[in-house]
Amino acid sequence: MKVDLNGKVALVTGSGGAIGCEIALKMAENGADVVVNDVHPENALKVVSEIEAMGRKAIFVQADISCREAMEEMACKAVEAFGKVDILVNNAGTNVGPDGRKPIYEFRDEDWNKLININLNGIYYCSKPIIKKMVERNYGKIINISSVAGLVPLRLQSAFVAAKAGVLELSRAMAIELAPHGILVNAIAPGSIMMEGTKLLFYSDKEKAESMLSHIPLKRPGNPLEIANAALFLASDDSSYMTGSVMVVDGGWTCGYNREW
Image 1 (cartoon, rainbow, N blue to C red):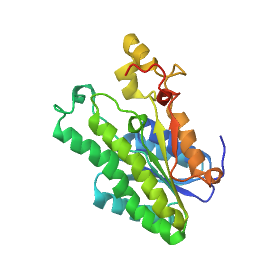
Image 2: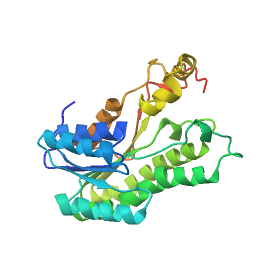
Image 3: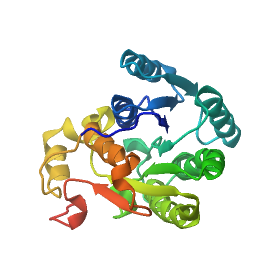
Image 4: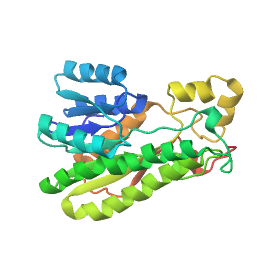
């Protein structure tokens, strides 16, 4: 997929992770300069190097999206470096591991607060200062990464489900408020995507993998590039009449096909 993002600046949170990395690289491949954000520098700095090798400009900003002050500072650094942000991809997020997956009456408060702060509050903190600059220019694309967990409930993950559902409604509210300012806001709801974490959790064990795939009509997990392509479309002019939409990229999961989980 090729679109024209020449002259555009994209900011991608969580660029050091599997999905964020692919989104950042995809934006650069199509002409955008990129603000690469993550709390961990190792992988994110590699992404910066790859973008620069393409002949595009990139900077790395190490910042925690759950910290309001850090997000305000990141917005300032982005504008200082590039003069603007045209495309904001709120990708950074987290979930509990197997040991933290418990029924709500046993769910740890610290896990609840962490997941809400990163997955939901983080989008608010990151978006707010960027939106103020977009309003001044009467232009912007905001892409919020949610999850199928925001559409269908998952057992033992109440905080993740609540946060990701909140992302969808927040995206719709943002779309309504920002449309008069020429700012389009859409969300992507990925299904089961093959990354290091999901590979270890589900796909390294044959029985677990078969159970996970039993409710996916395409009978395979997705890959980060497939989410990046969806983000690229929403960042492009080809999506100029889309706002408040949810792009579901899940192999058919939410069709309700023979779901065991």
